Image 1 (tube, rainbow, N blue to C red):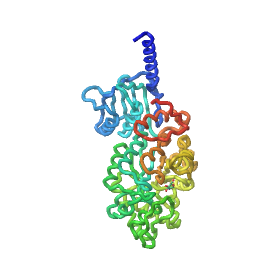
Image 2: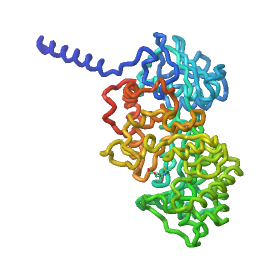
Image 3: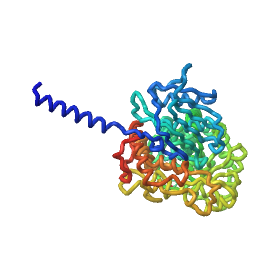
Image 4: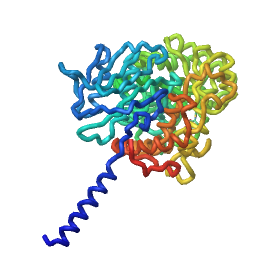
Amino acid sequence: MNLESKYSYAFVLALAIILLASCETKRPTNLADHNLIPHPVEISGTGGRYLLDREATLQISDPSLQGVADYFIEVQSGMKMAMDQKADIELALGANDEELGEEGYLMEITEYGVVISANHPHGVFHGLQTLLQLIPVNAEELVELATGTIRDYPRYGHRGSMLDVSRHFFGVEDVKRYIDFLAAYKINVLHLHLTDDQGWRIEIKSKPELTTIGGSTEVGGGAGGFYTQKQYEDIVQYAADRFITIVPEIDLPGHTQAALASYAELNCDGQVGELYTGTEVGFSTLCTDSEATYEFVDAVIQELEAITPGPYIHIGGDESHATEKEDYIYFISRVQQIVSKHGKTMMGWDEIAQGEIEKETVVQQWNSAGNASKAAENGNRIILSPAKLAYMDMKYDSTSRIGYDWAALIEVDRAYNWDPDTVNATVPAELIYGVEAPLWTETVENMKDIEYLVFPRLPGYAEIGWSPQSLRNWEEYRSRLAAHAPRFESAGIEFYRSPVVDWGKKDN
Ligand code: TNX
């Protein structure tokens, strides 16, 4: 090599090193600078570091934590249970801090390791979700954890998302992937919209035609599908392993064309209806003055209750424009009795507040603040899903490739920038049970479509439900959100690269 080429070789090498070094993700050296979503209640750094290698070990202080330890080992490759040696990560119960409740946790990272403690395994699970966000997605041999303390617990007990599996059907694997999205952001409820005009998606053994006929199609005329009870139980278990409660919805008395096309006796004229594959709403109704209808509802709720360990059954109740108001009110009170008889707490869309409902019933505000106010006067708890802010089937802007715009265009900043306390001034804060972001699927045909509408709005809804309002502001959040892009990418999520977020920043 001559001198000149030697110099240029050294130059190229130096340049390469500089480039490599600047590409390497810059890791926060202060724990408080991490881009965690949802933002923890308290987080402070102590300036030190703990080196976690890829074969880090885990230890539990109580056998009831084996499930969360197994989950962590499954999702963070390389981790394993400690044999005799001192573990890097210690999971413990007995946090001795009442304010943490069932879902909160305390994480202490010192020069000696990581300790996550909580009052309940659910809290430890949340601590592990936080730890997963502290570990870079493409972790190298050694991960440097900044030392410090996180003390964290949720603002609301109900932090949910709804998935409509009726308009388009999504199989068990898709639902499990959706559940994983929720778990990563500490969402604890998946509301499954199991029935609508276009399809009945849950097997009811005493009414087989609900699925053989009612489940046989979907919007656009595709093949549809349904979950056997066994498959549904598998979903419920998968969710439970991630501390997510399934809230099943059977939408009544409107949104029932699939049922009306399956059983003649549900129709007031006794004639079996036609299957429907369009996207209109508000045209169907069960026959509210026929006892056959209530026997039907009872049979459905009975089977659903038996495979649903969670406390709630959602009975829909929305947009029953084809039902006379007095018939609607009568119907809802009959269904309320059926749900209570089967030992479950009823949930319903805000219209159900027009009638007499029990105080335990939970009312989901989507459209009418007035209905929710009436429910609150009655003492009912309210879940907030205001369509103009929280509907993930709304387009981001007029160029979005799928989605609706009837309620609003919901850019990522709009989706984030609201306070549950001020959405409906007439609902007292103590009656706000939580927030839920629904995904209706008239325009959503596959997992890629789901991902496009859900990401990156979902982490924002998770934060609205978890973090104190005083710690939330869009300008600061948008840079934290940008830091999650590598996570979305490594999970193969095709997210919407919203122009209101500066995605250039690659950091965790
Ligand atoms: C209204 S929200 C509906 C759904 C539609 C949705 C589309 C609600 C309780 N009813 O049936 O799918 O709009 O955005």
